[in-house]
Amino acid sequence: MDAVAFSPAPNPNAAPFPSASPSSRARRFSIRGPRRRRPLPALRSSASPSASHHDVVVVGAGIVGLSIARHLLLHTPLSVAVADAAVPCSGATGAGQGYVWMSHRTPGSDTWDLAVRSKQLWEDLAAEMDGLRAGGARESLGWMKTGSLLVGRTSKELATLEEKIKVLSQAGINAECLSASSLHALEPALCVGNDGGAMFLPEDRQIDAFQAVSLIEKINRSYTPKGRYMELYNDPAMSLIRSEVTGRVEGVQTSKNILYGRKATVVASGAWTRSLLHSFLGPNSTLDIPVKPRKGHLLVLENFDMLKLNHGIMELGYVDHQGDNSHSIHLSSTSNEDEHDAASISMTATLNTKGHLVLGSSREFKGFSREVDKSILKSIWDRAGEFFPAINNVHLDIDEDKEIRIGHRPYMPDGKPVIGFVPDMSNVLIATGHEGSGLALALGTAEMVTNMILGDPGRVDFTPFSIENRFSGTA
Image (tube, rainbow, N blue to C red; front, side):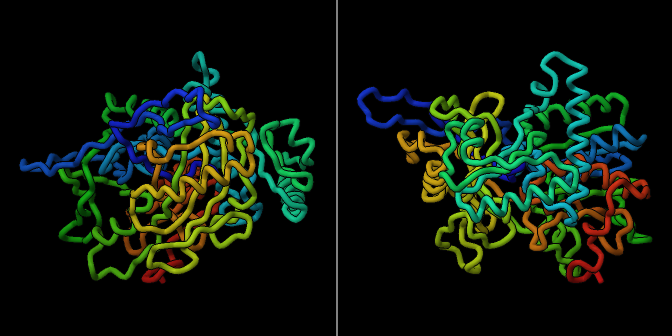
């Protein structure tokens, strides 16, 4: 799972791991998410809002919004302001597994070129960090050259993997087929049965969202003394500011500030983009971008020494994450939404740079609910146990686990992001709908948005991501 869009549910009272009981037959671990900056409540100021002038205003300080700001600052002379209702990593960005992978992508698809370009930009940034500081990219980005294993447990799934290997190899990706015995040599703890195997992409990478965001913030803030960068956290956008004469969008009104954007306003607000646009454009607008939240749970086990992993691992069932798929398991839905919205569970597993085990993942449509579903947590754990028998001897006390990552992927029904200008608004752009690929596609998206603002053709075709003729009210 590459950078799966989960947001945290922090709990200041979460207890550390209890010691294993020597008298217990099964080892006991509780779950505790990684430390994260927590948003403060945004308060409306009773004073008159402060006004400032910039070239570009970005609404949204997730990995996509911050990366857009970074690319503009590095590659143009433009000034940038970023505003967010919370703080970075308090939403979708901070709760992913950090996959910068090609294994679950399809050559020739609408998102292929963007994924290839974005991965190259991450590689370039990692190489730059390796050359600049002790600890290099691992310390600054959580960069890990783990490679990826996409695994199957049946002969039918192995045949599917072999076909994927052919397609990826023809597209220039280094992909290898591993039999069950070869896979066992790489990952002794992983069990796929005699008929299973894996697709191995040794050049796939992993990053840590917190470390990556911290680095990007540091880069952005280096432009503050030059008068080119401003960030406003815990300051939600309230409305667009329009010219009374031309109707052109001139900036954004937040709860505390007025941010004028001479050249462009970019809305990069993830799963909240749809409601934010409705607020911005008013009840008479016919534009409806159908991005919606796809809720997920993720487990993080600190210092988990019962399972050693050498690679990032994902079951084949996660690949078909846009619709129904026979490889993952499905749970009954208690929501009022369609049957296809029932929760599904697919195994994903990684160890991060701190040695914490990160397990996923679930997918369901529950609106913006942040409620912890214990049945889903148990299903994630049980599903992992099917692939990693060693953890079946570990008792997971869900009732003691108070800090679970829960969040909302910005899901698009057609499976691709929305990146482009709003029709009839020549200086307002949207960048959303990356679902579980926000981290992986962030740098490529940032480059694309920058090219759009400058009027340059860009390295990746804009057309597949355009709003025009794609949604209601855009013909």
